Structure formats: C-alpha cells, structure tokens
Image (cartoon, rainbow, N blue to C red; front, side, top):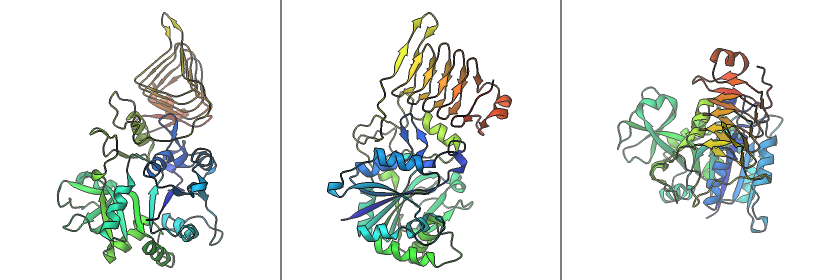
Length: 408
C-alpha cells in the first residue's frame, strides 16, 4: 500500500500575532525546543510514512529552513520531507484555500502515484498513530475518512461538527459551528469535532478537487467544500480519535489534542507541559517528538550566595540557558535564555535568546526571540501599563513580539 502525506502549512495565523509577524504559524516555537510543525511530522515519521510534502505559503522562510535542516530522510530509500512553497503553477495567484493548495500541486500526487493520500494540518499539538486511521479507512472502502475528537455538546458552536448516521461511522452532515447540533448516537451529550486530518482514496480526491476548481462559488476549502461533496455521495466516514492508541501513552495524556489557534490557547498548551504529571507528556520515548538542535552547551545554573541563587522549579529548561542568580517558576525557557541576578520569571514562555535583566519581574507572559527585558522592568503586574506597550490577551497574558524594544 502506497501512501503520500500532505501537510498543510500555508496559513497566516493572524490570531497568533505578534508571534506570526515574522514567521508562518507552523514555524512558531513551542515547548522550548520545538516548532508547531514538528508534532504532525513526528506523528507521520513514527508511523513510518516517509514520503511527506509540506505545502507552505505565507512568511515561509523560517519554516522552509527548519524543515530543510531538521527533517532529512534517506533519499536512497526514496524517503523525503519536502517543503513546497506556492509555485503559482496555474497562474499568478496564491492558494485560494486548502483544497486549492492541493489542486495547484496535483503534480506531486501524479508523480508519486499513491493509493491513498493523508492530508493533515501543521499547527496542532497531539500524538496520533495515523496507521490506525488509514487501516479503518481502507477497511471501510470510504472515499474519505475524517479524524474527529469528542467534545461536549455545549461547545458545538466552536467547531466544525460531524454528525453521523445511526451506525456512528458514516458521516451524515458536516457543519461549521452549528447552534443546533445533536449528540452522538452513543453519547447524546457529546459531538464529533473535526481535527482537520483526512485520509483520501487518491482517485476520489483528484476527481473532487477538479470538480471544486470549476465552481466559482466555492471557497475551495477541504472542510467547507470537499468533505460535504463526499458526505452528499455517502462516501465519508469518521474516525474517532478516542480509539487511537499511541505506544507509551498514559491514561492522563491519551487523546490529548490542542488547536493553538489563539494566543491564549497557545499559552495554555505550553503550560500543559510543565506539570509534575503533564497533561501532554514530552517524555514518551516510544513515540518521540523530533526536532532539530543547534550545537548549544548544557543549561547552567550559577550562584548560590544568600538570596542570589540560580534555580528553576516546575519548569522546562532548554540547552544553552543560563540562570545566573535568577529564578524561573512554572515557565518554559527556550535555548539561549539568560536570567540575571535577582530576576524572577513565573508562569511564562520565553523564546530563544531572551535576556532578563537584574531585578526584573516577568509574570504570565509570552516573550518572543531576542527580546531584552531591562534591569528592574515589571511585566505582567500592571495591566493598563502593559496594554499601552504590548499585546495583552483576553485572559491577561502579555505578549511581546520578536526583537521588540521594552521601555520602562
């Protein structure tokens, strides 16, 4: 059985501004040493799907560079992870939607001649063994299988909702954020929310994309246009993510999936990593999350002189970090971060090469790369002053953009 994996990584990620001011959403750092795209690529690689194309578009330089430097597979065996920027093969225009992105790159499918095509998004945090979804898809004979995660019925208006027939497998309707959704046959208080992951029978996908391309009224979106076509013809099935068993998973982190589409969701997903028994466990060696590493030295904690002690508690500390007489609590310190004497960082995410000055205080913040927090600065303590200088989310998280200059 020949499978081609397509990862959709062309979104702008406007709701993650300012983190996406200088990079594509899938290239946003996460958990200290990773990029968002590493999670879907790790799932595919662990499942031994080694022919992967990543469709990119907006602000794609850092994403393409990360994939090219990190995700190198043996070309001798015909394996590859290849970033494919928008090539404008059909004229001088960008991708009009996720379906159009694949339609404009049908040559990739023609060249590979797969029996099935996996299409996954690039910006979710989760572990999944896609082989189990592909197996159900082949067994069912469906044209498309859509991965879904169970969510409370009361949250239906926040998701693309999949409604099934009485069998619980065949998709009867696919609706965006309905206010009148009905519960599942086996769980009336739950709905299926689409995860944006699909498995297609190749010829069915090609035919649907060609038909959609001729429709001037279409948004050319997989979820909004292509999947409803298969629902109408009776060829769409749902895959229940709750049935997916990943080697090494625990009952606590099994079925974990987060859409980090907003700054608050991104922050909460990072905080999920640092508990004693984390909701999402990065330390599952049987299904690792892969990424690339710069040649940095080990993290260092220095000074043990009275109240001048370098320490990090309930935190993730990356290579190259120096905690020099400062303190990190419940925080994520990315490569190259430096905390100077008597500084305090709590409940925060610091990206690469952030410097926190002496006696500075940072609380409930996301600070992007290369920012210098001046000596004595206070971030996250005065909401009105913070809003005058930085982005502040609905939940009160202060967000400071890449290389932004901080005035006291």
